[in-house]
Image (cartoon, rainbow, N blue to C red):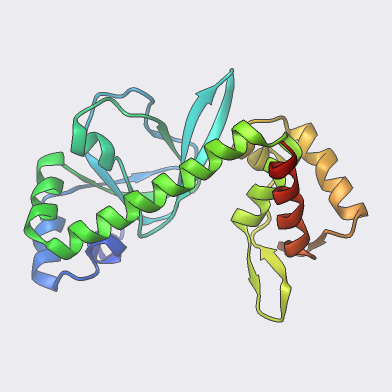
Length: 231
């Protein structure tokens, strides 16, 4: 393993800390390399360590009605496992590597001590948790009020970023496969494939090399709002 990657200096939560504080935390972590497809945490696992992604990416997965549902992706610089470290309860979801990943594993006691010792780290953590709660609340609302068609639209908008050349357009890069979208909205891959064909015929999405372009993101948002209002 490249020793240069073994530092929490890559983690956004600790951006405000100086090199000495980072170095101390580095020595209190165990470091491991995980290969693509390997599970790091199982649902209801009793461990309470916190994991920091210093290279690669992982996904948060749960089982729902016999399907795997993708809650969110965690990329380099982010972390997971903080809930179990805070409340000591079993894991609320499973974590699987989507690429080869370098992980720092920090004991719960060390994590809590760092939060209490550095108010700016605590504030950053609180902001992160608040953002996650808002995202999950929005998704719960979508699942309870929207048909699968509009949940797909909402997920495409969530995955996209604005196209700087056109305010009405948005870009998703790299483009997600149908199975990924299906896992995100709890449906079947075939349903997503049919909906993509409809969106292409309607001129709302365009396939590009290495990307999907949302031709009229404003219209997609209006369709979702109309579905919510008429629900």
